[in-house]
Image 1 (tube, helix red, strand yellow):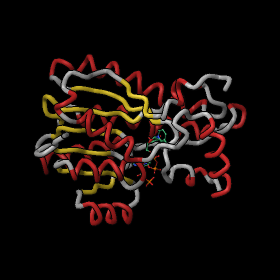
Image 2 (image 1 turned 45 degrees about the horizontal axis):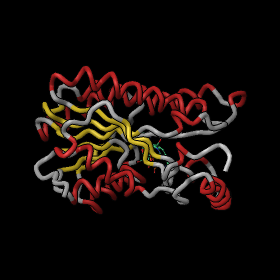
Image 3 (image 1 turned 45 degrees about the vertical axis):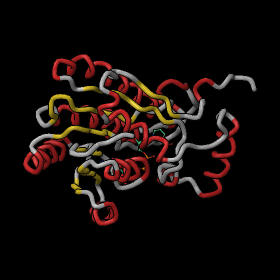
Length: 251
Ligand SMILES: NC(=O)c1ccc[n+]([C@@H]2O[C@H](COP(=O)([O-])OP(=O)(O)OC[C@H]3O[C@@H](n4cnc5c(N)ncnc54)[C@H](OP(=O)(O)O)[C@@H]3O)[C@@H](O)[C@H]2O)c1
């Protein structure tokens, strides 16, 4: 049984999807949880629904990340769990991708994740656990995902470097790579319910376990990595994808 009693956790992008569910799971396991987001109404809602702290911070803005680290330090002193989860996606062929889309994705998914880690280095307690939210897209070469996939590949690379840099403080840094997960992220792409259903039906044929992931599938692995049970695991990546990444090309 995973026990996070007494641990202080920060989750970026905790107002919906994987971050929201993980906040609930970590809280249930005993952690004191703070979530971030960039929508004040959604932050108030998550705070009252889950009984967590909620702080406005845009992961694309380094000044917000500095202020976030300062606020968390002044409330808690230090933290034990940092889940860098906030991220966006946009899918288009290389020739159609705009500079603004490129900058948005990279600024949030990689640049913002990097500076979140950097600003929290003085706030992480020795022995803390950092978990980065990657994606199996970092490895799949799926059409239309060039920039999103590259942002996650960069993040996974950071996971490995940070694991060795932070090892002297016994801080572990790992990544989770979900396959498709049922969250509001697809609606945010402008996909209609029908588009999402069609996409989901096509994808499910390629998933050996024949279903999309649920946010709780990811949250429980994050809880494990955050816990002392995982205290010899660092620099690792966990694919949580129902086997998608090992599915044969022909089936
Ligand atoms: N769902 C999937 O199939 C899937 C698969 C692999 C990886 N992922 C990754 O999983 C992570 C969570 O995604 P999700 O599926 O749970 O999507 P989601 O439901 O859209 O949740 C994303 C969360 O991140 C927040 N966020 C986005 N940009 C932010 C910013 N600049 N600053 C602060 N918060 C920000 C969102 O808040 P707002 O609503 O206010 O923007 C929301 O709380 C992302 O990194 C995504 O790339 C998802």
